[in-house]
Image: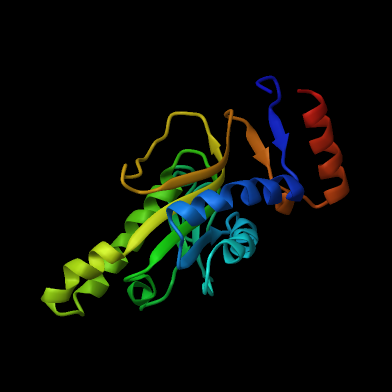
Length: 206
């Protein structure tokens, strides 16, 4: 696999990785809310929701979306920012903290590359929680803070040095740990048949 520069991932690959890891997430974290990082986290979050609802009881499991960009050009950013700064393009709204306080919140993305995006998302969501807690009596804040949890799920974790950290007490789940390859996801393909053909060729090269 180390000789392959690109690794083509199919919808079935992703579906099956999520199916395999969901029981562990349900048992160890049991989320109340899913926060998908767009656009790569949208499909994994929707698939995981189906499996989580089978594994848990009385869970509506709403999916919320945030938009973060690290590698793609965004209006108002400079070329120097691309790949270096995480840019917020969509968030949970002015009352973000209300959605999060007292819940077990699972952040979902497709890949953990440099870890910058995941670290940014976690820290900013935690800031929203702290801002919301100021609206509660001081006597209630610590209990609510303790009840508010975050965890992370990525379909693929690249085995490489990371440029940002995730606190050790934040549960972290990945569908698979992979070498530092360029991962081609099916939602990025314009010709899905050709994409699947290349994915089959990648597997045959192992």
